[in-house]
Length: 246
Image (tube, rainbow, N blue to C red):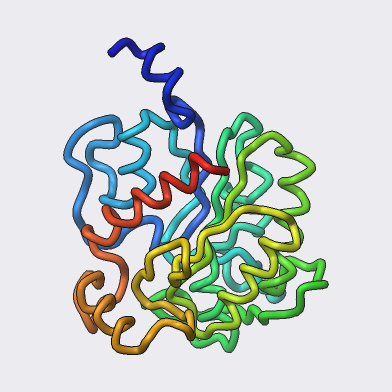
């Protein structure tokens, strides 16, 4: 098939995708992609989708990343740290797609306790949906999305509601924010549109189902409850479908 023919039938083909996320996006299994454009990169959903559609992946993801920036400035792996190269305002102007999948580490920082072996410094409160500061979780979402809507007006923006947060309030916050801004989302905790994934905080999912999913999707249960290769492969298909619809 000629490239032009493939392009005309595939809305994702050759597009630039700015991917914002943490270790659930970066991949921690130690496996790598073995072929294609992203050969040698971590075996993780962005590169699997990128390979299938010859997309340009712009990495704004790294283990431990938060969306909020602690007020005391002691932690710098944040999307809203103005001194960081991954500062949200550095998302390329010509990005066709922008997805945000952040919240796990913000929830770890709520009481400065860390989690998943990440840097625990810097308090990040949950805050409220009216916050306009990058120093709370709700506030950082407001700041980032308000800026993206104005400054990246023709990018297809989507939210992947984080599974793996410390409590359900962080899942609820992301859904509220998505609805506030009219931005499409999929709930990685599982709902009527999306399969339940590891470390779900959806209270409607039965505990025994959550445990079963944990056993089959963890890198090494119980010591490492990040998504394994099979989980990244599985979710890559419904995340790809989500991209096609936003």
